Structures are given as structure tokens and as C-alpha cells.
Image (cartoon, rainbow, N blue to C red; front, side, top):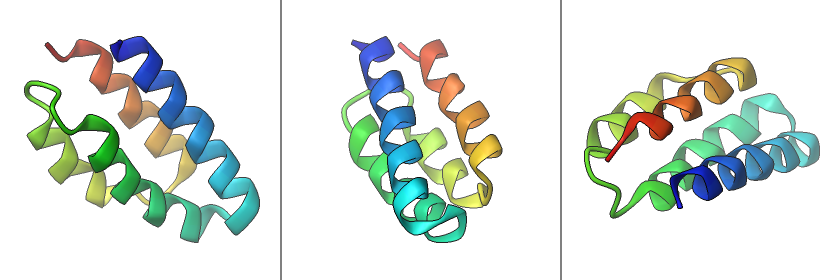
Length: 70
């Protein structure tokens, strides 16, 4: 389940950035990241930290952290 969520977040981010550009896409994905990770144990800290991410590369690296949860 975590791997599916991980892959879906990255795919969603890529499509959003392609459609809206990196600046807007990443900001919108920070909100979506919170939705995707709701209910995952220990994800609250990640939801807080993701708000510091501003670039796609940073976001992709950040998403890798959800694989270490649970």
C-alpha cells in the first residue's frame, strides 16, 4: 500500500507540474501530499515538513521518506 501511494504521489506531481509549472505544481502537491498520507502512522511530521519543499527534485526526494513509515 505504501509503495502504491508513493508511486501515485510522484505520478500526480509530475502531471501537475507539467500542466501548471513547477512553482504552482509543487505548492498544490504539498496539499495533496497531506491528503495522500492521511491515516498513515507517523506521517504527521512529514505533512508538516513538506511545506518547506519548493522544487520538484526536493519533492521527489521527500516522497521517498514515506517508504520508511509504519
